[in-house]
Image (tube, rainbow, N blue to C red):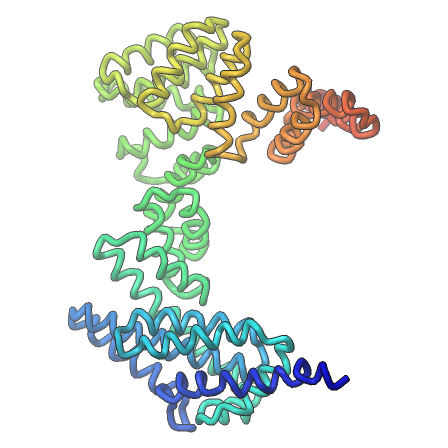
Length: 473
């Protein structure tokens, strides 16, 4: 029993060892017992005064001081309440703020890093928290331990408000200086601290949007619009973000009610594009016909008009529109891709391959064109080349259901049933309403001898086919 005594004693030794670090860190920010947040709120006020006076470097220094003090108070509260994981997170943020606050805080940052490591090594977090809280001899700790839970909660709310405001304003300052990546980091922290803090979701969405990070922009812009549904600029930004993330029906719904759409050609174009991509080609054609009459020399209009014609089966008119677009600008986006798809539907595989390769020559990241090219290559009997294109597609967009389906189908045809099943299972999760995927997955299970799963997939395939024919609701 004696030989294991050092293990039982470790939490107490741990507390004794790290308390010096924590006490050192907190003493610099100790406030009178009457108000443990006086320093934090003074730093916030000083920052906002400097901001109003246009003294941006001074404002930034005060905000960083507020971050340091706010996270130190939050970490102390967490230790007091024996919430060691939260304490580690709070002190990690404090360490970052200290490291960025100048040479005077570098020693504090180093101490905090050692503290975080020691907290992480604690074998008994509850015991360690109690020992640490008891050993820290600073006014805040004594005060926090004596407060009722409701009073500590009120302090947390004040800290949260101060941290969110500091992160928000630092983010806005960085965005105004054109440092979008750094702005996004600050605004992400603001959202982490308090997702509902005023202007956080709006500011984060705008920064993502400006940086063309449309996938990330959708969520904060949606939340901002929920909070202010009559804000036209928010609706338009969200609609454009939806366009860039293939959520065309959502983009069309937002733009349909835009009061300024008819007077703004760019909004009409975006609305028409959303309609085309969401399979409402007839409505889109009327929009683009009007636009085309006024802007016949705009190649992008001809491209989308070509898409509208193609969706309605008017392939020759579509080809004419797309060729006109290429004559106006031989590098116009999506024209060759659209021609490739039309030629594929017409069975003109060589012409399709040529058009798609022309698109990819100038836009190698166009995964839709590359997936269509893989389909063409498969039909031409060049499966090795098709597999190569599909793997490139899935490397950049692993959630591309059509690419996973085609990859699984080709693998199955080549006798790689187990690998094919994995790809087809992934495709089925991504596009559960696609009957063709379930049919190929059933065949893969059948060849692997997984009879019951094959039966289930064949049944799903039949149900989806019947549903598509309109025989079931």
